Image (cartoon, rainbow over all chains, first blue to last red; front, top):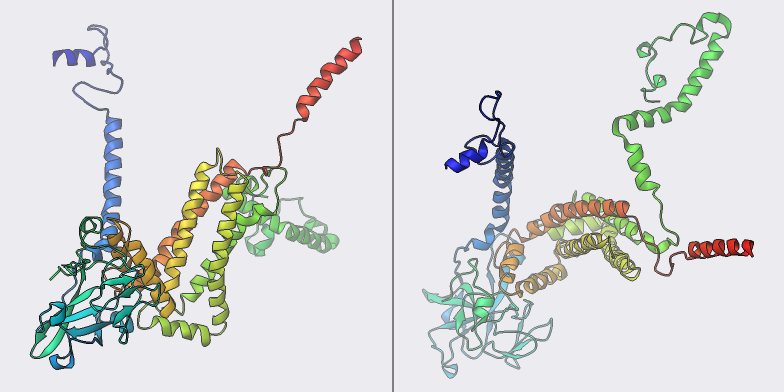
Length: 224
Length: 284
């Protein structure tokens, strides 16, 4: 301490009169920064704070939808006896309300098939959103496959890829039976072995390391 | 020159003439003389107005430096591609502003507003056509401009930063193309945008969140269209204007380059040899 003080008061020797010269220049005794530096730093900090007060809410405002989980919507699409295990029936569901046709999509629904090791009490709803880039696939009844018009993606009866560029099987929707009505709920994706995972966008692989490279998003419903 | 021109002021507000300045006191010839003075002053009025503005802004040195700057020998028509791109952008900005008067960025009404704009609004088809074809023209021109800069080597020191700004401008122009494509909201634009957003989603780790950001959610949402509209007509054009400003500033500051087929003039060297020779010749 004493040494420090000595450093900062190397002004005139006693007796010569006048104020002590600050040393180093601009520093007075006991100060760790000059007033000019203090005001510069303070002014810049105030400026940063003022900009942040406006800018951060704006960024949050634009980015917020990434973190919002939409409400689960269940929509009845028909009574249980309308669907069979052998063939898909197209149904139109509304996945986003209030935006007319743009909020609707087609799903293919069938009963669980014992031949495929499924429970006949379950209902399978396959999304028409191609797992390549999101074009609408169509179920070709004669061939028993799903076919995409854009880049020739082809899926078998279960929605597994049998040809073309898609990277994973077709997405599915959760289903449940309420009062004899089949209801369709949130979307989920599946791995190559049809294991359910949280919904991914088209073009994104599922399963294994891909679960980390294409992380699950809060904007989707949890996997069933 | 710097004063506000007297001739533009009503008589009552003019400064009174100094004694002896005008021929007013001379009676008979006064009328004719005053007329010729007024004509003279009227002729000078435009110059006076420019001078009035110039004295208050100092615009002349700035404008002469920018507009009358020297360009290198060999400057040719290829050097106009940048200006042509900017002209295309100005056309896009103007037609876009007017298209916005009739367009509704709502998923339910967008398509109807576009068909109304195209088929019913007077000159609507022409204005929309300008905007639609102008978009392609701008993208073609900006790539030709980049090709010119690349093949002429005009990106080299000290113009590297301007190349970087130009690349940012190309990306922003392509973003304009992407966001504008959705706005007519017909089948083609809807599915093309779905595909484009899903391509965004395939980037590892950040991709899924970027796609969510563009859509404002996991599916095509109620605010996706208005989000694209805001990006297309406010955010990205603002960024483009700022970037063009920086781009032009650097062009003016650094100047343009000569075409690569022009080599530095070697004459001065020859001149010096000649001088030495002639001195030698004189001695012998």
